[in-house]
Length: 464
Image (cartoon, rainbow, N blue to C red):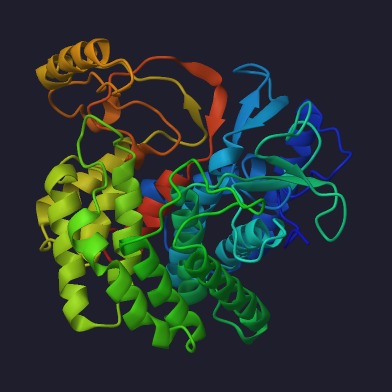
């Protein structure tokens, strides 16, 4: 198991990655892979395309080791390429899914065999996330070798060692959250439609369909909650009601057919009220801004694979009213392209031009945690005023434990002054930067998904 041999796939249990030798070897292998797989002629590449290809290659070289699952990398220093540790494994499923969606769109646009090879590694990662846990239909946060630099010290709590079977010698992380499930579905649904186009892909398509069916069956049996194999309900956003389960059943019907097509009406009737009236992605720019990204993934899938024209019109309206009205005109490129492509907003030439400029201002690969210089700005008074109220209420009623609002700028920063983070589109454009770590490198799947989403829908060309 582990998929195609590709750069980044060389770490196995018992290995001991070594600094420059590993980087040199990876670069040599990935250069060879690039020469072999880039047999499809390309038109002259523009700078945005060059940046997308660089991020894809760097993802393979350093950010998808072992099973092809996304990680952040800590190097020994800003100039020393020794890999000290991997980080953010607990969010690997969501970021691998976004990366896979990007490579799937890339393959749909270019039919580049490199895109397919890279995408298949991510497919195998996401399928492993469900197969490794021992509970059919339960998705892990991460799976990888139980050795450094993947795992240091013991494995307890949400960490589970695998001692037998095809994944022996690995560990996986549980207490899985709703955002990881969204990423799993987001990646595999796009791969099924846009990446797996050959008769040779049929076994993988069958594996995807079977896994989707198991996840639907398990969620339904568990009352639309994420329940770990030990029977405990996840403490990290377990609820799968509303637009999430509605999107999942639509996709499974599309991929598998019966008996899931016949389940759509029942699942819609059980979840329509939640979707229409109770679904609140904490829609504020001051608190849990990352939920906008979760909302966009859910609404993108639901609208894209919605089989009913009546519900599709509702999906578009929800996309506009609950998401675009807050994120619009802030150059959050992935969000804008989803709104445009799904018909939530009309085509706007200025918006398209602004988003192209936003991608041009996106940091080049590799993306290290180094903050830009931010110009003069005005603090937003609202979170400061609200925090005074929160502090007063928490002091008056200590058991409340109300969370505070994030202090931020009143207006969005220019794109080239926005904080460098793991996934730009989930970070508020009003954020005031701090806490540099130039030894920490991010995968860059945020650029990959945004760029190729724009290319697929015609908002960018290869000359841009």
